Length: 429
Image 1 (cartoon, rainbow, N blue to C red):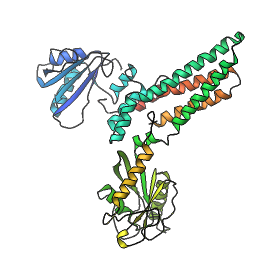
Image 2 (image 1 turned 60 degrees about the horizontal axis):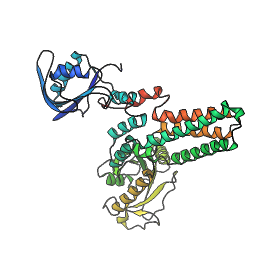
Image 3 (image 1 turned 180 degrees about the vertical axis):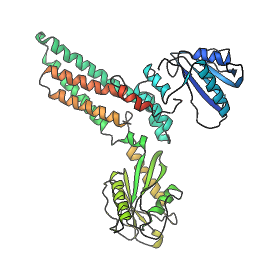
Image 4 (image 1 turned 90 degrees about the vertical axis):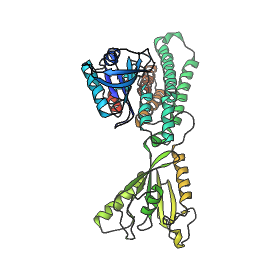
């Protein structure tokens, strides 16, 4: 399948002024010549009339010929900048199939780029994150990873592990050479240094994953304190039904907002109280569960009333309905969802919390659970190496640690995750 020549529309779906169709594979030049008769010089855009096998004109398009290996996929490639009408796209696609190409599968262009060593697995994942980025902060994080900062860190660790393995193997292969004790002491010290650096990298409070996936802020509190009205005000649209009747909200309702460049899902939950109503009781149970798992809990009470306890240490307190004259408790933010008083201060506080939960310094943070799992395994193997009684056992632990780090960048053992990764891409990537 990887020897086929593939094509796909790389621009968005729907009618547009211009649509970009990508072609990649060994027959790209032949296909391009079959469409436009005259192939332009490499990497020069040229206007050409595209015709099918019968000579019927399909479009007048800008055409680029991109010979490998200096292309996105590392293969011979081409791009057709077409008029974006459905009839044009269908006609060109039919002509390419007739010439011997096939439609690409999701993520197949980027998969070929990975297999042809145009990027490693971390950079391929960054492409997916960049395409999916909703905010400027997500875009910046994806670009840092795409530029290879995270890959460079893991390659450095892999190189150091390789050197450690070589030193350890030397001790095994030449036991009679009376190597100085400083050699083994240096190996142990380097293992400890690597473990310390990995531990610091892992202790990031999931900032990168939180930014990539978005934060969850749960809005909780007793019934009829204005939680739904507050969510509507923060989202600047009617998300939840607002009523003076307690228990109106029975299930968790969600609204997506952006705070300081971070995507945040506000979850409006059922009012917390004891109730004999079976449906409302289930809503209360779900509200407690969402609060326990949320990145931040916004605990709402009516001004002049105490703030109820919550099953989450990361929380802020909001006293709503200050327009009614109630006293705002110490440490709480006083607002009125009805008049808008205090909402700017609340938005600033929420933005500050979102920034604190996602910002990081130094190298790019971990962005996926599989990175974290692999590094945890590598750290565990290094811990075993520190405690190993025999040099052969230590060498095996070092090999397993190297293998775990290599799985992150795709150097080893990636066959089982390639399909799952690239299936998340759009067709044209």
